[in-house]
Length: 310
Ligand SMILES: Cc1cc2nc3c(=O)[nH]c(=O)nc-3n(C[C@H](O)[C@H](O)[C@H](O)COP(=O)(O)OP(=O)(O)OC[C@H]3O[C@@H](n4cnc5c(N)ncnc54)[C@H](O)[C@@H]3O)c2cc1C
Image (cartoon, rainbow, N blue to C red; front, top):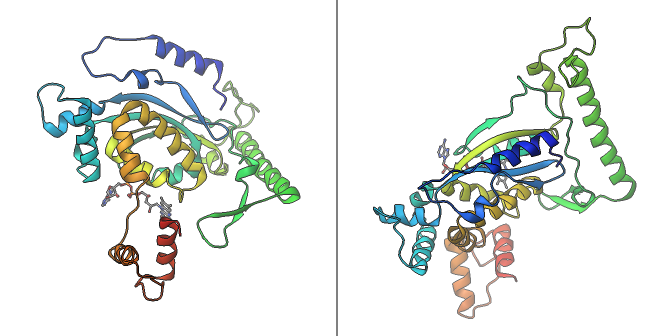
């Protein structure tokens, strides 16, 4: 992640301005505010703003006049109860806004989450930076043979080197042609004064999907937990998972009690179907259950055994 000196100065200036407020603030999140947490090779997340805290969840749940808090243990108990029983609206009272820099192919997965407010960097209006995601060697994996949506063993040697070369070469060439078609230098002057240059909204179609884009992304805590439960999960693609993991760190600083409840009752929890529960009950009663007589498909059986660590 290379923030320019100008960008760093803007962040420092934003951090230097403080204001008195009667609204609740969270010192641990204030300490993170505006700072860029690096993700992947050129990406980042930054918390830009937030509303509410753990107490706001309690306050909304109790529809109280004051801060709504009682003893910390009672508040934690209530938040954990709300999370356990999917009483979700009190979590919607908290909101957070991120600035995210991410490769376009990650953005395409991310944008499927419809409950956020998004404003993306305009490549009709501005020129995208010459920055491409190139996976670290440990992430350069083959197609999984058991999971069509997953990765297998890591590529090695000459094959890995060739793939890295192709990724870099194609992205660079496409970007060079993008700039060529725009006919524009970084300072806005034409590269060739005799040419008009293609419109930015058209030239961008030539870029590779590993080119970085940026957006502001605002979401309430309930829907953020939903996003994180899908994207911080082991089944999510690595390149979006690392963003989700960085966001969880921010959420821990912001609403530590709700974040713990989320990790306990959602992220670290499993859902068993009625048939799976019946199998577990039969096992607990001492019965040696086989897949064929379990009522589960072979795949469901494998998933259950993985959950049970058998
Ligand atoms: C591991 C993984 C693999 C995936 N593979 C694919 C794939 O192969 N192809 C593909 O197209 N997508 C794929 N997706 C995307 C997935 O299908 C969802 O689009 C994405 O995860 C967003 O989930 P969501 O709709 O629950 O989230 P959000 O859009 O954030 O919505 C949150 C919740 O709000 C409600 N909601 C929002 N909008 C509506 C609506 N219009 N109508 C009704 N309820 C609504 C729903 O309850 C929803 O769960 C994949 C996702 C994951 C995590």
